[in-house]
Structure formats: C-alpha cells, structure tokens
Image (tube, rainbow, N blue to C red; front, side, top):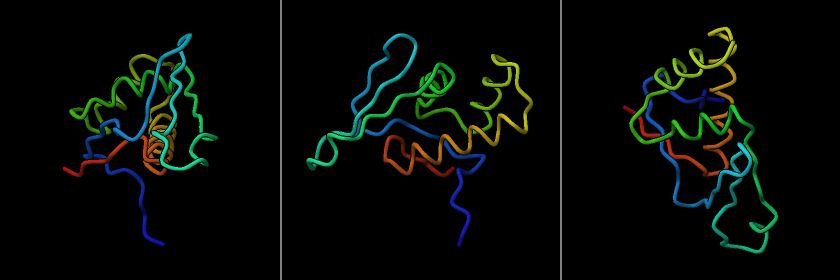
Length: 102
C-alpha cells in the first residue's frame, strides 16, 4: 500500500465541506450534510488540535505548523511530527481539510 501521509512541503486548508465552531477551547465540526448518515458525524478537536486547526490557513506548510506546535507545547519534535501527521491524515480522510502539494 502506498504511503499517503501528508507531505512535509504540503500546504493545508480547511475544506468547505465542513461547518465548524470553537466552543470552550475545542473545535467542533460536522460535515455539510449530503446524506442522512452525515448527521451522525460530529468531530471534536481538543485544545491542541484546535490550535492546529487555526494554523490550517492555506499558507502554512507541514513544517511551519510543526514549528509552531513545538514552540507552543512541551513536546519532542519526533513525537509532534508523528501526531501532527496522524491528525492531518485523519482530517484529510474525513474531508475536513484539503492538502495542496507544493
């Protein structure tokens, strides 16, 4: 199976296919309903995930987002990179973000 993890030089932006709000420091989003099954899909990002969500502005690369996470949180670069890659992959897989290869 080919590696489909986000590219280091990729830029990410929020997709128009989700509606989202920040509530109590967490980001809550739901897919724009296309089918009844979409109504059962509600996603919540914790404080760290919400900060990453803020950074998905269509201008920052994976490395730039990673640098912010490392600066703002007490985390090792390798761990932060693995966690960021996993989050971005999950967000992309549920069509919450789009990856723009650079």
